Amino acid sequence: MTADHYFSAEPAAPEVRNEIEFNVAGRDYRLTAASGVFSAGRLDPGTAVLLRKGGLPTADVTGTFLDLGCGYGPIACVLATEAPLAVVHAVDVNARARELTALNAGTLGLADRVRVAAPDDVPSDVTFDQIWSNPPTHVGKAELRALMERWLPRLAPGGVAWLVINRHLGGDSLHSWLAEGGWPVQRMASQKGFRVLRVAGKTD
Image 1 (cartoon, rainbow, N blue to C red):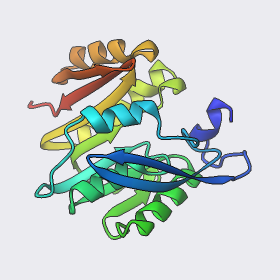
Image 2 (image 1 turned 45 degrees about the vertical axis):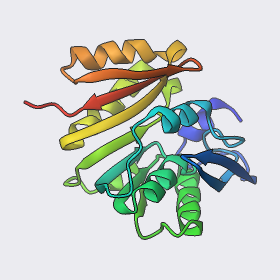
Image 3 (image 1 turned 135 degrees about the vertical axis):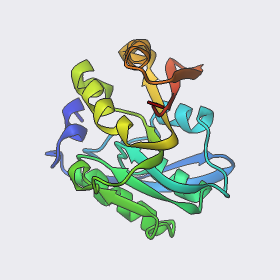
């Protein structure tokens, strides 16, 4: 699979499905992935670090969450499982990824709380109490920053974003850029070459 496939709205690669198993917070997951989506062969190491080191919600947490760049849905499915009172918007430009996320959410009994959509189809008045993302660093610095500029302002008052970035693919520069832009950002963990950043909403 070449890198641009999972950025495409309609992947050109033939769809070959497989099952991916992983454990988060003591729960086992088995999700369907496919060629033409991000990290189709395994749980991406960055996603694994984010789910291990990020502040996963507890069962009593309510609100509206965003999984930005959901792929086949591991983050969205974990969030909806850990926080059964929350609604999770799972967003991806890749139609195949959205189809797989909906499939996996349905298999896990989460379809009523995982709302899968293309970026332009998320209602403009929806704000998010939490944003979770392993963003696509390979799109380039300008596109990555544009992604942050589009979605971080949709944090609700008191909201927080959890991001994981490969240190060698701009993790530290993104941290600096967010701070320079007035976003309260902290590096919460550094593991296996990945930075886990916590970004709070702006207060002004």
